[in-house]
Every structure is written in C-alpha cells, then in structure tokens.
Length: 442
Image (cartoon, rainbow, N blue to C red; front, side, top):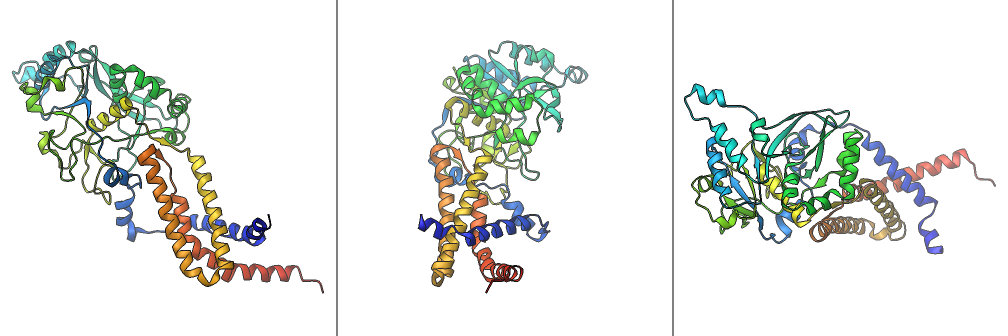
C-alpha cells in the first residue's frame, strides 16, 4: 500500500492533469501544414495491419470454390456466348458485376446488328442462381438511406436476383476498399450486397451466421432507424483479403504471389477453352479484369487500392479490380474469416489507461532515477511503441482482431518532453502561485 501511495500521489495527479490538458489544448489549435501535405497524402491510407498482408503472413491457399471469369471488352452478344459456355458445365452460382441498365435494341436496329439483348436474355433465362448488379445512388446523409437504385432491364432482371455493387471507400484521393456493408436501405426497402447474395445462393447457412453477428445486427438496426451515418459506420465489417488475381495459375506476380481464385480469361470463356472442373459446382463471378488477365497491371477506373498493395506509401497504382474485391468478400463469408474490431469506446478507454500508466512510469523515472532520465525515457518510449505495434500485428495476424493503439503511441512519443515541461516550468510556477495565495503559517 505504501508503494502505491508513493507512486500515485498529489504530484502525479497534477502532472497527469497537466499533460492531458496540454494535449487537449494543442489538439484544438488548427495548424496549416500544407508544406508536409505530400507526405500526409502518401501515408494517410496506410494502416499498421497492412503489414500483415504485405510482409508477415503466409499466403493463404487459393479458394477453389470461386472462379473468376474475365469479360474483358466483350459486348452483350459475347457475354451471352460466354455465359452459355459456362452454363454447359453446371456452375452453382453465377454473379455478374456489370451493368445492364440500358436497352440497346434501337442501337442494334439502327446499325443493322443482331439484337444482342435478346441473346443475353436467353442466356440469363437458362442460368441457375444468377445475380445481377444494381447500383445505389443519392444517399440521404441525414438518414443514411439511399433514395435511388439503378437496376438491370426488367427483361434481364426477371431471371435473376439483385445485389448492389457499391464498394465503400472513404478517402477522397485513394479509393481504398476496406469495409463491407451487408445490406443497405433504399427508401426503407432492404437491398442485399452483391457478394452476400452470391454466398447466400451457394450456402445460406454461411450468410445466416454472418448476418447473426452482433456487429451486423447493430448496423442494420441503426440503418433501419435512420440513425446518423457516422454512428453506423462504426459497425461496418472489415474485409479480410485472401488475395488478388495477378495472372493465370502456376504463375506469380512480381512479389511471388499466386492467384487467390480460379481464373478463366475472356477469350478462353468465349471459345470454351477451359477446364470444366473450374466451373462445375463452383461460384463463377464475372466482371471486368482488364482486356486480358495477363494485361491488367495498369491504372484503371474499375480498380481499387487494398491492404495487399505493396507500395503502401502513396499506393502509386490501384491493385485490385472491384469484381475481385467482391470475390474476397465471398471467400471471407464462406470460410468465416471475419475480422473482429474492438469497440471504439473500449479502444478509447484502453488508450487512456495506457497513457495514464505511462505518466506514472515516466514521472517515477524522472523523480527517482533522474540521473538516467534522458537515456531511459528514450528507451522506454521506443520499447513501448514497438510492443504496442507488435500487439496490433499479432492480434490481426493470428486472431483477426483489429485493435488500434495510435493515440497511445503518439502520446508516449510526446510524453517525455511534456513531462520535462511540467517539472521544469509548470510545477515551479504552480508551487509559487500556491505559496502566494496560501501563505505558510509560522
């Protein structure tokens, strides 16, 4: 007990209050740092857990339940032929991440071309468990619900299920795919996310388990109640990425990574030059992955940045097509590789506790081991920062748990200087003021 009262005394309490008050005051000052903006822009999209994907984890085995089919630059007639070729080998589900929103009948008539819309409708009618893309538009920021939905033509839609393909990206300059929303509301009507609908048709039990997660239920409740979108954003699911499509099987990209899913390129599918085992009983996800899969490593408006991007400082080129992002989400649901995120309120409390304990530790070192203060404070700062970073990485790599110690780490790096400011200037000033206001009795 004496040891505790020796460490936690009035001086420590005042010191802690001073340090937290100063940091709060500094946080209220708006500082123009445009001169370092390029550095900030380069690193703002980076998260510590990205290191798990790019440097630490062993590459997961390919998810052979999923086959990616590139539609390249095929027109609707070509896509119809491609689908017919795939249907010959009995896929379990076909999901198409492409938009069939406009009727092109008049265009075909004016140009003397066969009506490819009719061919596509026939192909769709012969497809079992077909999911077509919808696009949500015009979100109401007050309610968090959408007011419009673009969908496939009725002649196409009658043969399919709907699934919205909007990918959540928050950054203005970098479209980074990290989060997933299982459902959205369009004027109080529930709409299902494209990968969720695909997974539901393949194995409903997996989606039932996902939808039963506490986080998902809270998100849906907030959306249904039209609560503030900032609040509901705290309950978005984090995507756990299995991998990317870099080339064909047996080949790797420049970083030695193989494909995460089966791959059939547009020409192969169009000419029926593929192994039927890649299709039979599989989830086939069709979408644009470059003119050819072999030639898809360039900038493209259909691509997103992901944590798999090796060039995390600036992420010079987006690395994953949207359709592959969807495939990763399907794989996450099928394999139940969910990412659990520690509740923001709990994270804040944990960070505050770490900060308070460090004030006590640093104050003890400054007061009782002052001769070693300069060197020891630096060692403690670096050791603790590395320890907290290691905890973050271990939790994510081995347990798929996201925990953020950013505030605590920043606090620790500032603490040494703030403590010196307190003991050298603030404390003497406070004692002087105290003695002037309350004179010591003789």
